[in-house]
Length: 238
Image 1 (cartoon, rainbow, N blue to C red):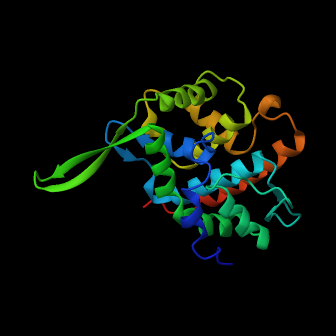
Image 2: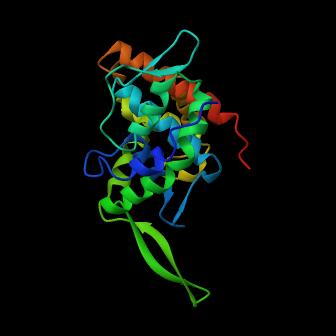
Image 3: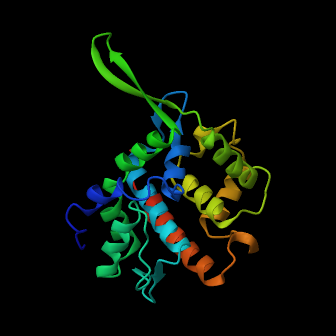
């Protein structure tokens, strides 16, 4: 396994693109946040799931390509401007990697800067509290933007109502399913046989004709997401 550039993920991730559109990985982390408990669902595989979302975002932006051997590489001179995505692109630009290798290299440094962005945007609030009434700490609460509710409604329409998804929503629902956390969204997203079947179809890249305007983008994105899901689903859930 190749090592990522020293310090690059930590140094760049929180500093660039903070005011731009949220990345797919930010949306995924926001969905995985559970307002009732103030926790993040699926912590055992979170790094890998977020890394899968970063790869999917890069593929959606035409920054990635896949090789005949199933490795992931970069499109020359197509570096992303967002600081959460750029370190992953830099890492893969040095040498194409297998998806599982890429997930392991990219994932560990993603949680904190992504959470910091969500807090900065007001999607999640960080509030002070005291542990045992004595020790200062912080707790996470749902923010004021209602963006989580909108994301959840989009995923629900696809999984429950059978709506044909746009590419971003398809990738988001597929990665959410791969994380193993969908049962925790019941009853908002009922844990039924039809939902399970629909989610597995999305994991396999069956996204429908409207999932992307460009056939090449759709193919690369589906390949990257499917490969990431295969890698994620074999991880121990602990």
